[in-house]
Length: 438
Ligand code: ADP
Image (cartoon, rainbow, N blue to C red; front, top):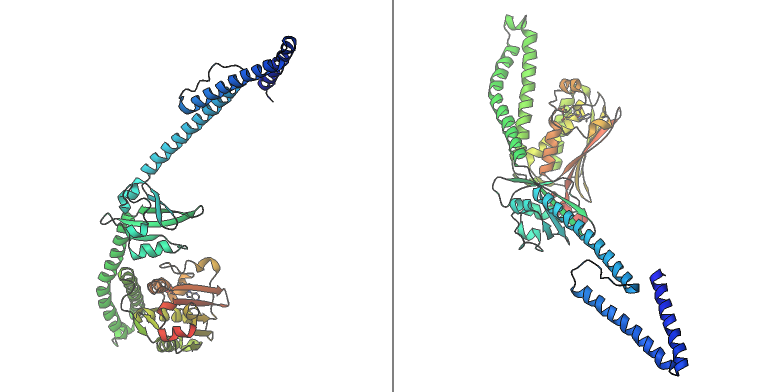
């Protein structure tokens, strides 16, 4: 208990005692005690009334000059008011700084609650996503930006890659979007302007496509002449030029393969994903490529076996799927020593269809596995060249699988062999087969 309260109690106690003594002397003890109590009641009620009036109307932060308990109450109230004022000032300065920061931010930022309802957005979001303040607050963002890819991206809670879309408000502007969940039901949507990167990427793509295209014709001519010279029965060809011409011919064939693969990649990058989809007889296609694999194996005499489920077909692009199968089967032949085993499988799983090539070849160390689908990435450049590889095969496979909503997984042990598995979604598996699972 504070000193003021002790003093107040003393004051009341002594006043009542004095009233009692004087009252006893005068014969009006009860009356005097009541008078003293009424006086105290009046004093405190008045102080309470003043405090109430001050709380309601006063803007002044200075405590009134009052003694006793009420003086202390006023002082404590004044102190808490001061603290609150400071806290408010601090909060306002934080808020102003936050506002300035979000205004300066080049990325569009939107706070979403309950899934996709807009709670807040910054100025960049108004410029890049075309959101209007305040009309669009509390609207669902997928009602304002109706691009199917954006709507699907927003629904999916496990997006590992950002989504690239054209800005709904700016022609030619490309946005890269990420959604980050936080708190209980909040999500932060951040959109970055990647138009410049996109243009650079386009320029790179065009350059590779044009360069490959331009190189193709002269290479065909050179190939033709070198082939004729290599096969020429003339004395000149049989003597000093025999071996250089053969090497030149081999190298020009290699260059042709690289140019063809680069062109294929360029086409995959620029063509729409669902180009020319049809029901493909995958089991027959696999058997055909396996036969080509046996021819390629030649003297190496690999044991190539095929285990396919004949009832499973796929809706897809036939030439592209042919390219996946040849790349994976020919790689197994190239990177498996003579006499090794290669098993080719095609089967249905609960989540889709799977094309698998298992070999007992050289295998791949774990640090290389996640880089194998990069262009020109090779574990052993010499071995790849000897095998006639371009370093582009698995990059092509990855692109084609992307086009079919599929993905590639690789398991491998050095010295033991590898399994390359291409998975295709159930949605592409022919319907007659899908019903087996339902
Ligand atoms: P390449 O034309 O060089 O074969 P790919 O893109 O097809 O190019 O393959 C990239 C690299 O992955 C190869 O250079 C090779 O090192 C490795 N690789 C691919 N398939 C196999 C396999 N079945 N066994 C071992 N290594 C492989």
